[in-house]
Image (cartoon, rainbow, N blue to C red; front, side, top):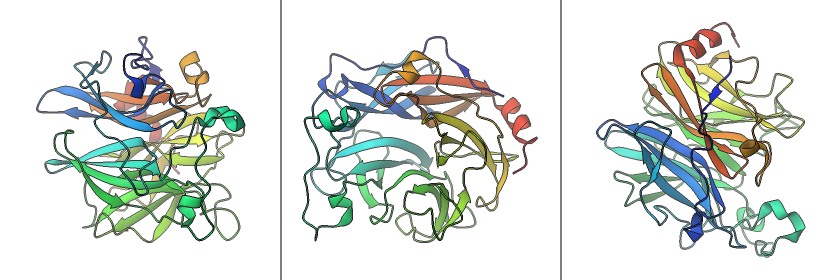
Length: 337
């Protein structure tokens, strides 16, 4: 079972006309607007500035392949100050009621052009030892933003423990058992004293969207192509369980995709999990960029029986891969966890 790439890939690329997106357009959230009957995309973008500030742009499409940008300016930018002032990255979007809830990774300072390693012109400032750890390490935390129209946003606050470098936070699109549920990947919860040797996917439940405190291990690396794993796309409710995609970083450093079905009543239970990857970096727009060897989706859409997976390629482009939802579910049901 493999996802099939769109022949028109990459479906979205850096735009030389706009300084804030002339270098990077990648890792998009995606959903389908039932009112407008259009695909929507909130994508991560950055220009060629040495600080490498990261923004979100907005685009729409009638078919999921040909996209139109809806603004020549970012629709969402780093905060003026605080822990999300450096960048906003890797959005995931779910709708509950009339509102869209966006989880996004961020840092207190811009990351600089990280692919240049020691040659980069900008590096985050060195903070004194009594500053919070997240500032001293310019680590990632995950925040929540809420909007109805993608024109005005409410920054609700930090979802994760700022003592952990924690991203890949994915909100389930409804309460389960009366509670909100997230998946996340705290980097420090691994190694000695933990069942997982490498960073893995954890799950947490709470009565309030800013109340996630205790987590349990959901899934860790178990197959030869996996080392570090993390979640990717908001779950879709199916008769067989909550369908979600995840990535695994192998010993070769490549990011590959797998899929899971989680129990409908208790999503802390993995019922089925693909034994082999369903997409790996192979094309130039996935292997030649600013983080080579990456396929990284933040959103997926189901239309009729087609699963559309919108993914970032090599931290530079946006690609699309598709499959039959029925075929993927049938395959997953042959792979009990």
